[in-house]
Amino acid sequence: MNQPDLAAYGPWAVVVGGSEGVGAQFAEQLAAAGVDLVLIARKEGPLEDTAQRCRDLGREVRTVSADLTVPADLDRVMRATDPLDVGLLVCNAGANSYGSDFVDGDLAEFMKVLTLNVAVPMALAHHYGARMKKRGSGGVVTIGSLSGYLGSSQHTVYGGAKAFVRIFSEGLWLELRDAGVDVLHLVLGVTDTPAMRRAGLDFDLPGLVVGRPDEVAAEGLAHLAEGPVHVVSGNERGAAVGAKTDRARAVLGHHRLMSELMKRPADGGRASDVNRGSDDA
Image (cartoon, rainbow, N blue to C red; front, side, top):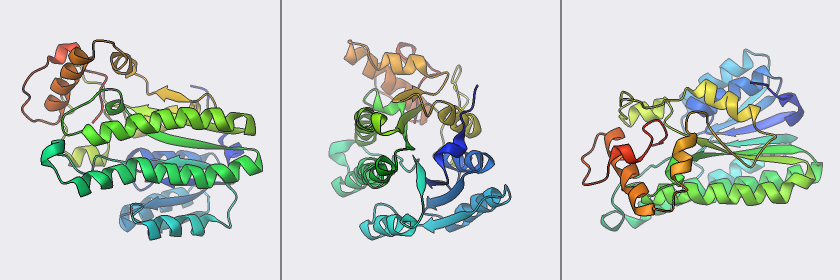
């Protein structure tokens, strides 16, 4: 895999969700390529651990511990980076922080999922994208999921949010490409991250393709200049299933697979309808 000149996206990169997993790997690989970093995450301990590994690579690293769903924290992150020449934004924050059947769940909790997965990437892309357009160069990476290709029980809001970010990123790519700013929406499948292990996913399902954070980050950086969407290798068929016209069959198959992955009962659908190696939590 050919790696582009990542230093050209410097001198500073902002990595949101940079404390562990894929975000931490983005940070370390950018540091190794000669880019200074601002790392943002909620948990101070893992955030500082990642920051120190990047400092050990010879880079300047600043950290901001923040809950980006809180408007004051989001504003604090933007103000903290205003003096810096930011050439790359990696928006890795986003998760299904509340799992429930929609009509039985707490609407306020669903709104938090939307804030983290839709409002936060929009705000960050607006803030840093405008600065990059003015400087005439830069890059924006948003992180997607195959959950954004097909509906799934208890992922109703999360899947819809990921679908939004994919289409939003395509539009942003169109708007910024003539200004010298690259935009890439990186679509992940099942990835062996600390968060996914805490969620109790069954990584041992037969035929399941499980990505490694270092490989996922490297693939995203390698395809950054190509945009607007790149599906992580091994998950192409899952994205293709999401484009099928027989939506009922596709959604039922997806539901069955997600139920197996999350180790919960399913009431219909056939796992064989969806590629076992092509789904995301």
